[in-house]
Length: 129
Picture (cartoon, rainbow, N blue to C red):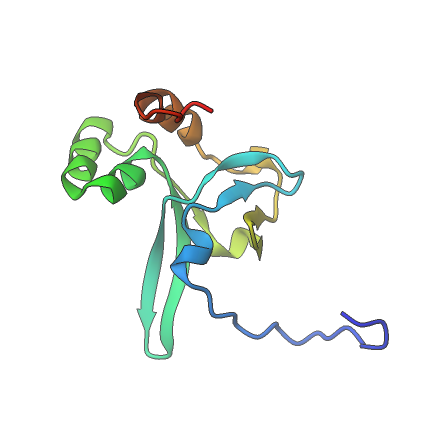
């Protein structure tokens, strides 16, 4: 904001975002701590457009992006134990990272990133770097 502009109480104009701006984005808490990556989003279809409602984290959503059958297998085996979501109202800023409003302790992400790193990425050459 420029120095001569007065702060406004009006809500900010809605921003048009593409899924590529959000999916795979690193989630960071208010103190800058990495708490996961966005694996998927939940959308709501409304008369005025499509709106993002939740960010989805966890291995099941990641597995489904690799191959739909792998995602279905992940759902049967993991039964949602590692699947978590964060409401879109918790997003402070979207840029190279998806910045959240609260501290890391306020979000139950279940250590999904660590699970993915140790159970999936370790089989991919260069995946542990």
